[in-house]
Amino acid sequence: MPTSSKLQLIRLPSSLASEPKRDWQLIRKERTGFPGRTLGHLYSSLANELGTFVNTAAVHRGMGPKVAADAIAAFFGQQRWQHDSLAEICVPPDVLQACDELTRFAFRTQTPRTQLAAFHSIVAISTQFPGLKIFLKNSAMVAAELQHSGDSDTLLNCWDRQNSASCDLRWHFFCEFAATCITDRDIFPIIKGVSRVALASGDAQESGLSLIEQLINSSIYEPTTPFHSHLSIRYLTGILELQYFWNHLRLEQQNPHRQLYMGIDRNTIPAHATVLVSATSSPQYPLLYIPVGNMSTTTHAFIIDLGNRVRSPLDLGLFRSLPQARQETVRTYYFQRAGIHAGNLWAAFLHGHQTEIGPMGVDLLEGNVYLWGMGREEMGGTWVVSVDVPRRI
Image (cartoon, helix red, strand yellow):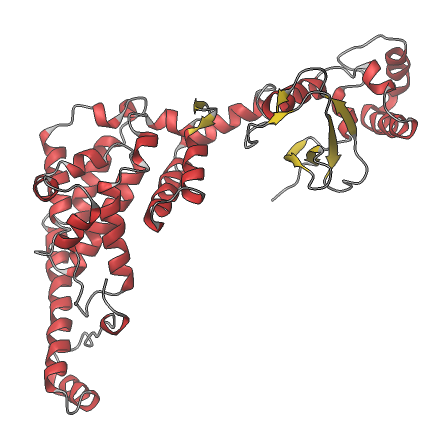
């Protein structure tokens, strides 16, 4: 990477051709006594202007990094490929040619401006379509360079402009980021061979962790380099753009067995432990004390059981196990919720007659039906489930 003294980008005003005398006087006035440096910056600026012109002309002719990237995205973004591993799709020659063209624009034979556009496109589409990076890696010019060494430094030697004044920190960042996207061997194995639909789901895939959870962990705890963390985040961003993710999340929220434990780590709760359920508004006054029993359980299993409890008619034995003050609070909450028929339904409940319109387990939470978190207290190690009321964000 270049030193900070090399990162200043000097550009001439756009009126250089129409008013050369005034612009030349400005440069001479600023750089008096340094003719070599003045000419160097002048040539660099002219190269930038020329690069802009060439890149614009290429786009008008149906060429350029963005045109190639759009052609690739149009193919891989088709509905029919959403349930397939992109790496196993039979790709037509014109799409493979677009991959060749896109990566060709990243090499130093192009202008810095064109290279930067190629870097942006490589980062965007390789993380938007997991598996696509295989085709970019196998493109003609990239494959030729990587045949002896498959690391990102090999591509950087062909792409980077270490001593160019026309390339700022942002340019060098995307240069290295794009090289990492193509050559990565740390993050890609997580999503290799997985369809976009499967990637967008929260289903456990390995060791009880979904692919989304694995990417989150990779971005925080396991990055080999900062760019591997950036890469994980870009893959996660691509997931958020998928309608499948939001559809799956909506289904999860409607599923009584799985709604509550999304985002809860899988940990073991020992036998004979007691788990507290507390509202975030008043954690010092637990809503429930739930004993684990004679066998240990997991946090996921506990949350599923809690979800079943609050969606079922209120268990009379559990209700009577509450302190008297808590029983009265639950009763008051139910009467406010149930309206004019609350009295008769409550009396039937106390006599053991449970109905779907009578008191429900959710009344124990007094409206705190959103799971806020689950963890262990630092003092004493007691497991606590935190719940909250629905809020508009």
